Image (cartoon, rainbow, N blue to C red):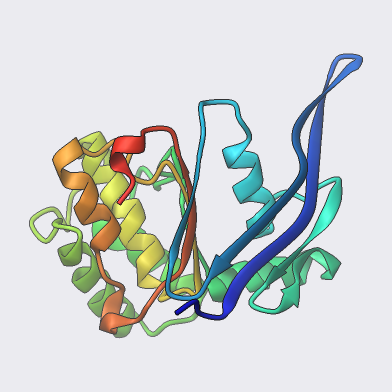
Length: 209
């Protein structure tokens, strides 16, 4: 049975100017994702997956089209309201990890919860729980310089899950993991067993669940 619509986009278009030329990356794209489901966008490098995720999540305004996220018209909001929506409702797993060099794994997760004004003790509890869920309970005090690429990616996954978001946007979320670890990356639960919904892009069809 199909759940309620979590994310619905109509007619998304986006282009970039390169000198005097304009490269059209998205052209009249429609997209729908449902609560309780993982929705993937697959395609080769340069096909517009990252641009689509940015447009759907409020990171980059499309030239045309609309995005209804959790029933709210995202691009009709003021910039500050879009930022607040992302903080309250969205988790992000970036291809480049976007970790703070000076913070250890636990602090990386705690930091995003601090932005949400989660109490320090609860933030620490969630951080330890979700890092354990992605197999990093033995790496809680390691900084990014002391981690492998796969470990950094799992920290990024844990950070996104720790917010217990309604929407997770993931750009190549398991590209740095060994192939045998990738199914675990999809299955890691959010703290407290909260369900999450996501939209993600990837190139490797072997890693699709």
